[in-house]
Image (cartoon, rainbow, N blue to C red; front, side, top):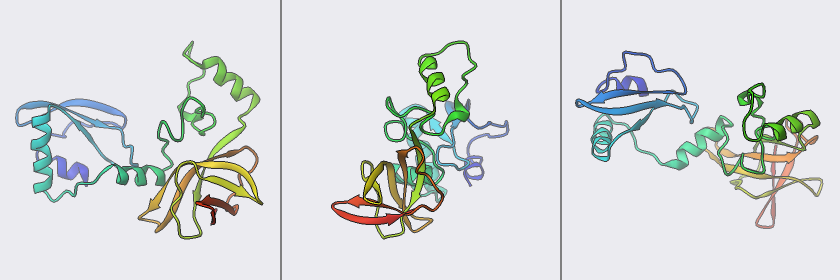
Length: 197
């Protein structure tokens, strides 16, 4: 309902495409409206001076929009398998490891890291980022080791409890070759093994 709610006090008549931004007006003042959609929803990010943002916040509360924090954003992004830098992708987890080939433009003339990515694409990645849902009641967290037949095959990069699915979910970096849909694995959570797929 974000478009419907925002259009009550911000002019949204010109279309704002996904992964774009534009300057709009609120109370005759400029703000920036962006659509990164990082929760997988039709959502907006609003940027502006502090006083304007406070006014917009109050307006949203008046319109019965419920405030929420980063934990909610984290749940939604995990349900969509959206990577978070520092967890699911970083200096040691490449876009190829994280299955983000679709965002790479390897035909671009030159960019930092291009030769390493081309080499990894040619040789193949040793790891892959996969999704997991817990069978046992638990919440997977970053760093928990993943076991298959008593052998560590990877670890959780991001994990939480999905309010929609009513179970723990995670993204995991596992050794290449182990992924199978619905493969039953175990997580070591404080020396207790919990099942997941």
